Image (tube, rainbow, N blue to C red; front, top):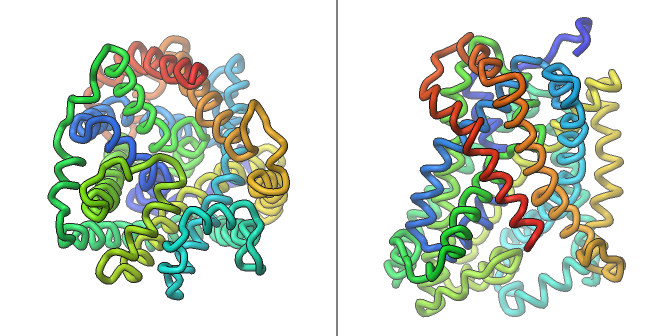
Length: 458
């Protein structure tokens, strides 16, 4: 960072924690976590997730946040400063949020559309033919301007950009201090409501109690471990340049290790709440049929609308749920855009407004491809995938594990872990020091390599 340009910063640790936790708490928590927990043994998955969150997860979080705070750079400059031979990691980390942001905003547009429809009382209309309604919407074939997925994508992208334009303190921090408490309050309220649904006990049992019946071989055990670690890795916004960027805005006197634990706690709690919001009601209202807990977009946009209209006060609950998901998505898309804007500002010396506008232009182009990839451009496939699915695969399944593995090699075996621990010591103790060393040097690398390999072979 140029010495002439003072770096923005969060005003307090709570501001930093809420912003970083807001980044971590996203669509992965509210739609991927519940169905994975349901499919991978309920309580077994939950227990493993909690264990890995406070060992593997916090170790990687501490590493990325510390890199940002120590270098006072966004990811491109940070990796170059750490070791010139690892500067390629800076380029890779810059590409990840650049690619993810547009398609994430497309999905954010879907969420915004559904929240709006439930708010104006159209939930029952959607539920009557939820699969047909969703297919018609995302293929951009439904009539009317506000029935067009491209329009909702642009609305959602604009909302994200407005907050980023206001900067770190007045935009990101202030928004996070409003959105995260609201998100937590809504989560608790919906969870309490689900406990009142007749037959919910069977769903709670299905979600919370360990179920070993799906484990029939060593392959099933390995699949459980990789699914748990993979979900945690993606959920915490690791290897996306985000935590490095946010770390670069963190004041030197703030305790990195304590902040990282607080982020992990908030992220894990929201994920657990998401399961309680989704799994028990679906099982209860489907006559105890757990097969309704399906994966992918179908869970949120096809199954849940049907569940909401069958509930007492379903319109209110459905609206509250989609507002909750909207808040979670927005805090994540803000962090994705900020990571890219920060990189553009650092490397080009553009001011925030110009940098944000340049990011918007790229996002509109790539996001439009993702939008139209289910409709007019459906015939164009990349590695047998639509544009959105390809962008998701190349970032989440390939680039992010490569970045995380390389970062662990750099920190654990090239510049050594003292590089991180000395920075952490400036504002607090280094607790569980041996655990951190073992995780970064010996545990994270093979686990992340296994995730990468399984993704490539899938």
